[in-house]
Length: 445
Image 1 (cartoon, one colour):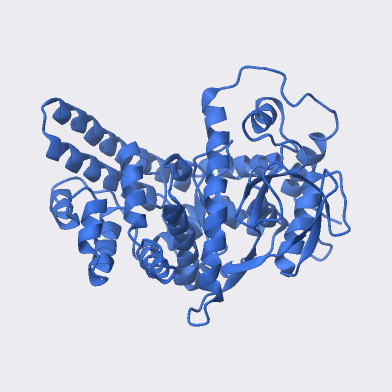
Image 2 (cartoon, rainbow, N blue to C red):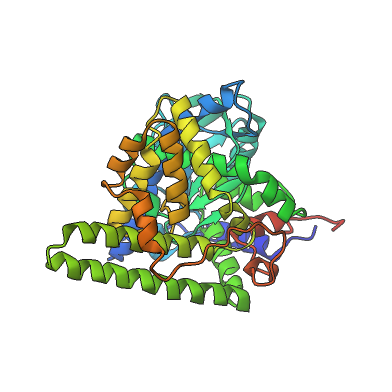
């Protein structure tokens, strides 16, 4: 049987982490930023899991068409394969050891935070990586299955259907990772850093599903050779904290960074981000002068420039996904109303990110999206609520100001091929795309 080199990397990392027992926490001093990333990861999972359950009502509505995926009412993590500071950080922040550890649950989940999974149906393995595979198969089957925890309790788990598009967070060891695909989107840890409310977390889930629904055909047409169901993708969709997955992620990103097209995109992104940072510095100077109204406007303009830069620097399938972000906004807005949730939550989440100056994510709106979403809100009779959420600054006024400033480029034109697209180069397709193309095994390939 012939395996791809990344699969060997996965197995070596997973098995190597289980070979020698080590203390869970040896009292070492850890980087505060590393600890903060692990804490944010846990907070994000705790916010998203209930939102995923709420979103299931959309998939169950016969009047709303969407492709489906199966989800679980709990999230798991493992430190299997982790070494040194990472291994200690898992335990110190989230009490995660090498076993599959529950780190987030929705209301009514049979499992609780902190429980360890030791058996799934009739399968009991020492390897957490193997147990993740078993869990993935059980989830995708959609039928009830049994899980036994370390205290001997046996729980019956019922997967539930949601609209396609897994909502996942970047691993705490690579907190800025982001990628967008019709099967799954990976959001950076800027999302939990904003402290989303229940409705704002629901917006993030529905937006991700809307991206798949509105842009799936475009993304599939752009990349017709994708092989669905890669083991690596399945593992990532269950526990992004697996050290082996992190190792593969780092390798993929390093390879992409070596390519000229990817380097050019990063250079362009850095240049435009510097413009946005200068606007933030100008905001501080104006604040000292007491120009309160101009402060808010400057911050909003700087935020939109950085959001446009983030969107414009995407490549591959994620680039195609970015051409329908406005449609995903509208899809999420309509589905929020269907669920009786606050559809202005997306604007409130944008405003929270703006105050923190976090624009490296899909929920920080650029000018085009802000104007489009404002029109959606106005058509729903919610113009006043939208203005309140935006701090009283009309999007049209911001648009007039933006026209007089250097613009960050957003590639909104849809094409199936682009000579300057980093995805045109080997290794530049993106995290999720590379997972799906990973040669897993086979004698006939």
